[in-house]
Image 1: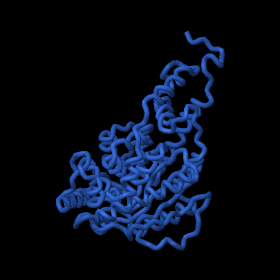
Image 2: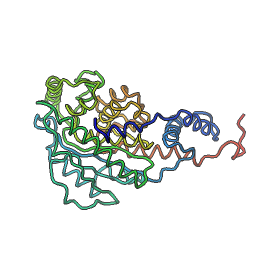
Image 3: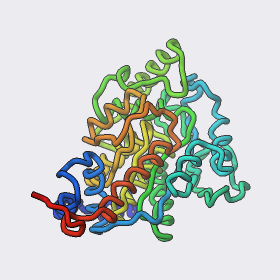
Image 4: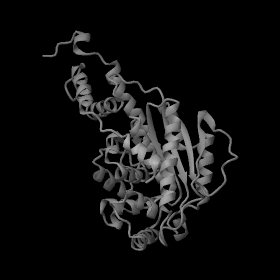
Length: 357
């Protein structure tokens, strides 16, 4: 690992448990039975501890969608052609995708980061509703992981540093919370491979239908991932090596953004399966990143459950989502803000003149 990545990692401090206790003390003073708001109280305390602010407000919210293509699509692992990645980036910028709708509902702007889309997007204009395109392409998609490493270690490092740069640029403008999402045809194959290696779970148990594969295509997908593990021999103790062998540029970008957010004490609302695979890489590089992650939901993809168990993260909700894009993260931001507003706006027993016997 080179300088910029190492420097960011060195800046990540553990979340101070004293802030968690301070938040819980205020929550227990509010006009309700202790713990009666359930997981909202847990989320509120986590947000306070990360931000180190006893009365937090979420004013600046972003959902960053990292996009890249995957060489493994040549193996027939997706129900959609590779061209859809670039087409969906254009849709994000036009404001027509599900993530645009849900991010707008959350009061969050959308940033789309091109880390490796197999098309030239440099001529695209700024998007609708304040969304923007960040051009930080590492390459025009990865190589076929079933035949060898998806990328070199240098490309893996560059993808991480590109994610660090994207997050840092947004943080300079002011950022209270960030949701992380992705777009990349073929990326559930990459995510399943990363999950199998990192968690030790069998490939068949962590591989799902992705974009809607039938049974025969699903079995082919499992075989492709098993071939990738056999040809690359990734070491689960070497997160950078796992990313290089099996990852995507957008997965590296998401992991880098998580590292940068943790270094700046910014909470990260994690989306579903592919974003979870990026969290495995980020936490493999620095375990303390986990303390800055808020799992939005549990995906229908079976590998996501293995990721959540491995990281010890408990999702806020389960709506059987499997779209990606950052849709779950956008909804998660809504619930985090609701939890924070409880701390900001709810009266204490003393303020309300209510007996707390």
